[in-house]
Length: 251
Length: 192
Image (cartoon, rainbow over all chains, first blue to last red; front, side, top):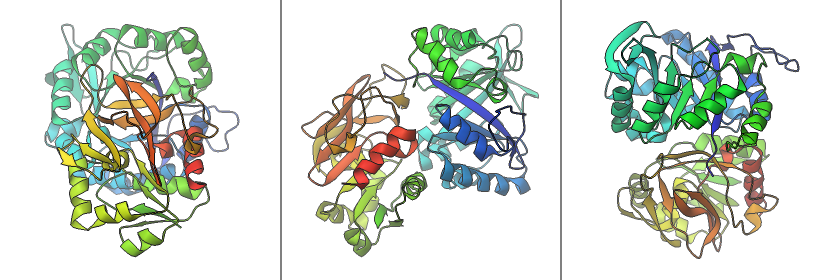
């Protein structure tokens, strides 16, 4: 039985983890490699590293970090942030990333998804979609959520799949940071309209929220950041809980 | 020395990292002498079957692989290449395993991506591994079950999670990305 995946997301700035973390037994919480190893021990299923500096001059620092992560952990991981050309993707994949996540650049350079998929395989291409409910529809936002596009999240996801995306990372801007639960409606809508896996993101605050998104939508994975980093929800406890509720997770 | 076959596929670095962690020296090479002399050969990879077979044939590496007598491990695409045919680009493959590689029918999400377990574990490759352990898969094509199947995974339909014939071993999942369980399976192969 294929398991539902639990994915911690780490924000990186200039090679360091940004959000505070409170693992008591970690030497340097700002060191992404240390934190990643901690998550391997906790039996996280995958990791996502987002480079939030993502300026051209800092990209090399990130690629070096990706190499260090790949050398130290034996879990699949995705990297994202500022990937706008196939060369950017190639640099990170050759450094050891399993997948790259692209967002605004998939919109601005429509050939990029196909280019990466042709060269490295669809399984390498995660298309990240930031979406917000505008009153009538769940619309796509780009430029780190600053620019509204005329596209609906569902249509954009379907298009990305046709271009060769292997996975969708769907973040609800309405839910993100609220800890009030994942946005069920859009997650359900998107995951039922594509035949590639969808990662639900934004809004996780309790263990019940994870159960809800897995039961009520067809998503394959759920992503969260601060609740894991601050130890509010330890991953082993979350998996114990989900398993008790009949959801198949890797133990 | 462990040789990792160098060809037009990705994910070779991760396998090499895993070997380093286990204390094995390895080289990434397409040099025939080095491949023949290696203690073991690993054919890793994420890629496309047709372009991979073309690459191997152009360099005579297809025949060389068939002549290897040391233990050989194919991972993911490596397993597909060891079968006799792949629907991925409709290409004749190495034919070590008399099984065809087909695309998953779209009854569920494709690629099959994530952690899944296996059953009917046979042979030394799975020493110390139980059927409730999970390993990491990411693939859109699968190998049929055949006489060479060592372990079965079920996703959409039952398929070969691992295969074995003589000195040739192959796994559909990625042991190098499968945490402790993957380490154990890799070590079992390296200790053959």
